[in-house]
Length: 229
Image 1: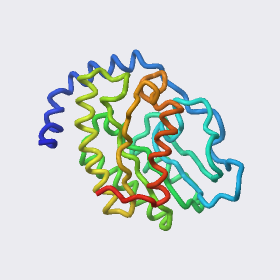
Image 2 (image 1 turned 30 degrees about the vertical axis):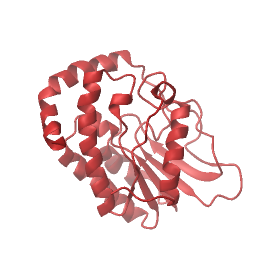
Image 3 (image 1 turned 90 degrees about the horizontal axis):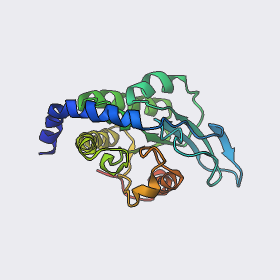
Image 4 (image 1 turned 180 degrees about the horizontal axis):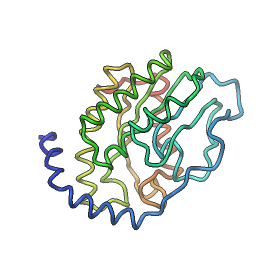
């Protein structure tokens, strides 16, 4: 039934274009957070070397400062509007092979928003996973699935529903690929308070939203909870 709904969303493509253009006109384009993208947060010698890779969420778009948290050496390699294929083809090949112990992938939202097909996502996200495993074979790779479009304040109800149907299919494929290719699919972040969890643009996470997201992912990153199947 879910896959049939995903196919039917193509019939709603004119609605997606019409309402999507309206959202784009009304939404302020936010910049990444200030602060270095490669650094250590002071504290005890970190046991975690973390690479955060993906779209605008990986770049901390929606907040002002990125330097908060426990002691850790980390790098953010995230970019506005990035898709799985762009990260695979243009970002990953240009990253030095530093000894990252943990990698968090925040990717899939733009693949969904841009109406990429599930087969295309399978090829591009699946290729990204293969490339990551080849470059950092011992790192723990965790993927954060696409968030609920219907919970984003900027989304008109119908557009949010159309994209949510497609996000469900993207997430199903993403979980399957992670399980097949040596990555850890996290569970979807539950959004309990959209008013506090989203930035002023109604789409990106606020500081409280990023904190909730980080706390949700922590057990998956550190291997303290069961993986999603």
